[in-house]
Each structure stands twice: as C-alpha cells, then as structure tokens.
Image 1: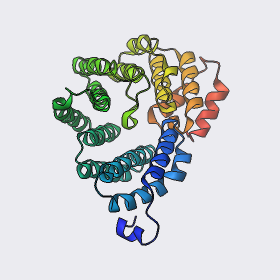
Image 2 (image 1 turned 120 degrees about the horizontal axis):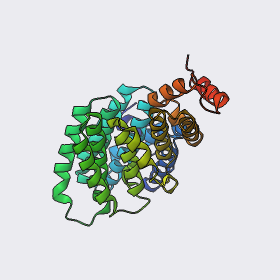
Image 3 (image 1 turned 180 degrees about the vertical axis):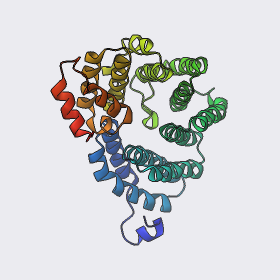
Length: 309
C-alpha cells in the first residue's frame, strides 16, 4: 500500500467524522462475522486512514490513530481467519505503532490485547501469557480511575490470560484470571464492547466455557454453558463461538445429538466464522461419521460447505 504522502496526491483528505462512521459500520460487520462484506469495505477504510494519520495534527492525532488501531484489528482478525498470518502480523504491528503515536495507555492496552489474540491463534502460548502479564502490570497503576474503557481492557486482558493458562493446562491460574475478569465485568455496561473486546459479563462466562474446554473438563463445559445467557450479547461472532465450544463439549461427553444441534446453531448464526475454524471443522468431520443424531443430511451439507474431504 502506498504511504500517506503518495496517497495524499491521489485523493482528498478524508474527514474524521465520516471515517469514524465508516469504521463503526465495519465493526458491526466484524461482530456479526460477515467477513465477506467486511472485506468489501475495509481496504478503502485503511487507505483513507493512512492519509488521515499522515496529516493529522494536535488533538486529531490520537483520534485518527485510534481509528487506525480499530481498523487494523479488523484486518488482523480477517487475515488470521483466512490463513494470511503474515498480514495478521502486519496489522497488529500497525496497532502498536498507533498506540505509540497517540501516547495513550488505553490504545497500548488495546493493541496488546490483540497481540495476545494473535499469539493465541498461532499457538504461541508462552508469548501470549507473558504479554498479558506485562499488559496487566502496566495497566494496574491506572486502575484507580473510574474510566470504564480501562476497566474493560483490564478485564479483557484477564480473559486472554485465562485462555493462555488453560491451554497450558494450569487450572488455578486460569480460574484466577477468570475471577478477576468477572469482577471487572461487574463494573462495565452489560453491552460493553471497548475496542471490539466485547468485554462484559456474558463474554466473561463464554470464556469460562472455553477455559473448561481447553482444560479438558467436558462436564464443566456443559454445566457452565447452562449458565450463559448467550442471547444477551450483541455479537454473532461471540454467540457462534459459544455454540462451537458447547458442541465440542457435548461431543467430548459422548452426546453427538446435542453436539450436532449446537454446531448447526453456530453455523446458522455466523457461517463465515464457523466454517474456517479448525475445531469446528474437526467436529463436523466426526459428526458425519456417526449416525447417533438426527441431522445427518444437515451435517453432510455443512461438511460439503467446509470442503471436507
């Protein structure tokens, strides 16, 4: 992509309010896991943000860089989902640059939260754990304020840490971070979604289901899933993630019928998210080889959509 100086000669400088509206609309597509539609609008948003960040001055600098961080996060998620991990790294590096240019502890925390997500996606569990620990240490001096965005990022980072520790099979550490996240969630709005973290009480409980799954405790997966009011979170991606985790937990408990119900429910909510996820693909592959459920035709169609061999 050309740098800001080259792009300025090619186009008018976009207005900050107009770009803010476009980023917000793109974030709604990301939360609904409508990645094809997101791919139609995100490249131009990023091009316009390159221009805006290059010319921004004064108070507009942190505002422009905040938009760049938010757009780069969407690029990172999309790139990882499609298997373009090099582009995912480029996106998160731009997030870190945005945080430094804005000189903002909030943006720094948001960028580090996404960096943890990238490392978790790539299986770099030690790096994700250590980054979460460092980010929490750096956030702690700011936690005496009443800033709900800081509190949300603090809680979201604890959720990243909980997932990292669960994949390292350390239950006490994972549960400790979950407890911290639940406490933080009590102080943020029910529909909280600071920097696309979807940090709120419902998402904390969705993470508790995921942590039990990663720890290999299928009974806990189902008992915790029963307590999640998933319809109260305004994110198709988070809802589908919950149903995928529940489906895998059902299968681990030898319950293929409810597993099939749950994975089909996840796919109905956010097919573009579900069909590219290895855990969902493996589950569908297992389900099509058993007749212990009433959804044989639907599971075969889903397997075909996933292009499973």
